[in-house]
Image 1 (tube, rainbow, N blue to C red):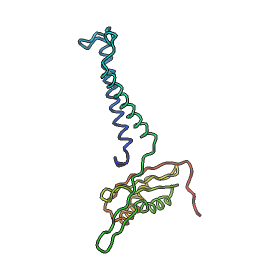
Image 2: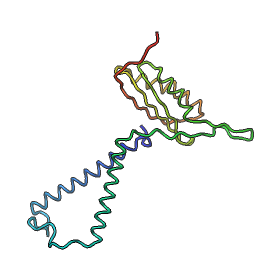
Image 3: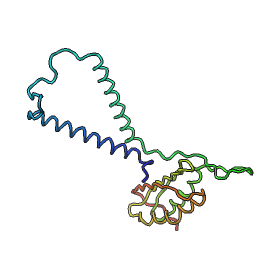
Image 4: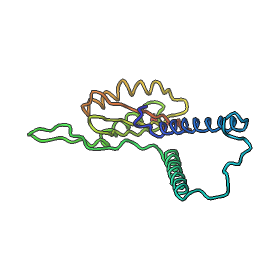
Length: 192
């Protein structure tokens, strides 16, 4: 899967790694401080000497830092709860010269691919979105399959027959594609 389509996973890994480093460092510091291993730090000394309040700027910085951390937490939570966005569709200029120009609506270009994928054996439904700029296109496929569907044959069929046809239709040499398979509990309807 391309990293452009999987920003929440990249954000998760980064935040979890940062959190693990911070918690590990804090735990090591607390263990060393409690055992008296840190020089110039008395394990029995009060945390804050005296009873005076800190200067006003310290409180303002603490509140600002808490707000920033809270907003980052909300952003992370939104990335978890909101389904990943499909690539933004656009209009591509396919042909442009003195005789006229041809524009392609990328949302309409991907619809026939989704219909063909939905007709493959073991597939119960499919959606496709062709997005990005013409110079950097991205195709996102979401495929619902039966529990016993042969995923490898579906991928093989898409890669060998369906994607080359779409690339030829939109006149692209390369088309980065992200495919998400969702296994459903119901079976595809069959026409006899």
